[in-house]
Image 1 (spheres, rainbow over the protein chains, first blue to last red):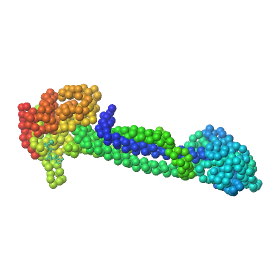
Image 2 (image 1 turned 180 degrees about the horizontal axis):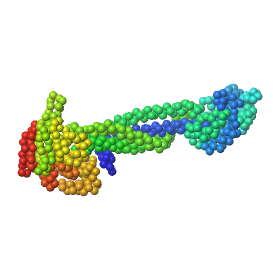
Image 3 (image 1 turned 90 degrees about the vertical axis):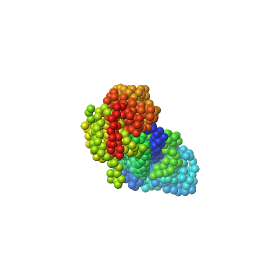
Image 4 (image 1 turned 90 degrees about the horizontal axis):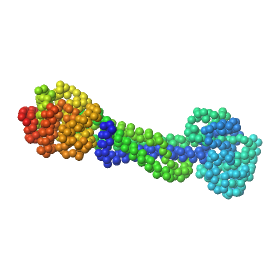
Length: 406
Length: 231
Ligand SMILES: Nc1ncnc2c1ncn2[C@@H]1O[C@H](COP(=O)(O)OP(=O)(O)OP(=O)(O)O)[C@@H](O)[C@H]1O
Ligand SMILES: [Mg+2]
């Protein structure tokens, strides 16, 4: 083993208690960094997952004016061609089409404004969680059935199997069209805007009522990887773009979510910086203590012909060794605590944050970068923190160190 | 006899910029010949340590020059001084000479390691000097597993190991009982005879002084007397 490393490690072992305490302190700092990153990642995954998998999907296609002014006649242009492309793209895992219309529902108890959504009974369950979120009754099966939210059911005072009337206006003829529908199920998303104002019906029924068959207002896509929504210049993205249509991602629809993450990231970065500063001061303190109790030794080292530079590197190496020990502690703590937390996950119990809801427990998400970059950062910091103490030790004149230590 | 070491008109003033100045050394001129076995003696505070520290370049004089084998030590930079010390001067302190985290073997080979000697060279030399100070078999002990006398012998072995031109020792026996101290000086004397290594050491102890061939008596930072003995 090179002399410097040997000296570094053995000098650390001299005061085991101090070394262990320092390394623990630094290690906890590292573990906190890893843990915070893992938690934010986990939150992100959970949030994005619940956002995109519940209903929205990762990407959406509309008529280019539909979102501005959602009129029924603004259907997706060249829907057949678009669907062809969608089915061709290997990156597209699932897709579904929806038809939407403003309407009224009437029950014996009440009349309310709703958004009626016609869904593809085969494709829809692959994309969204409407089927899983049915808390009473069943998902749609027959043509003249309707799914309503639990809060709407209350307002309408309706039970499973009872009937309501859905009224919409057909765009071409401007005729008012009504259908008597049976409530097949009641769903709950726990998200306002859904549970009290949205009803789902089979797409063919709504097509018939609106008099626009084979058309859709919304095409929802789920890719093999969420990251595909990041690069809008990709070949995939270009292949799905049609001049008359608008191609969006969940990031465009709920920009607040990404902004919230950027903020969380910035906050973590700031906290990390403070943490690293504390670590830096801790390391300096430890090293100065180690230097002051060995002043005479530095004198001896210099007396037998050790260059000041060698002493400088000796302290840096000692710090590096301390850093290595701390990294081992830190990784063990991070994995240990993370593992414990991940047995159950952290339950945020349906807290809503920036348009997304944590419906499931959050798990700390580990990735290899956390175990390479953070420890490396810490090691670099440790060595940087050692520069000042090391300079101090190297600049000690022998006569000084001999005097002070006696 | 050739002069190996000389100082001229050496002055060391502490607190030069303060009202109460201390003249630790006040005009010391001295020559040491190759192979000498010299003791610096004098009362406490007379400047023995100061002189030895300046001899070895551990401290710098306020005025005057120090020559070792023709090299003026006062003109060397700190790093040059380190290298010069490593290659030409052995130094032994009163105590705590050894690096506590290194074994006897590692302590002795330390200087040779700095010099870039090969492992084989180092091991051979360590065995040699350990035999000379009668510490065979102690290679793997740590300093705290040795007695004070043994530690000082390791310090002598370390000083000898790199074959320096001169070995300087500041009261090497002061922390030892008189028997052990005498043994140490006898050992140094034997090495001096066998290898003609020049030794300069300071002491308070009359029994130790007796063993020196030449006594340099310091008083108030000046050379008060010089005595040649037939030890
Ligand atoms: N760093 C210093 N600052 C001020 N005065 C000092 C300093 N070092 C030594 N002195 C003074 O210089 C003088 C010589 O000191 P030195 O240590 O050389 O004496 P010494 O002969 O080795 O004494 P001892 O036998 O007690 O070891 C003393 O008066 C001492 O007080
Ligand atoms: Mg002294």
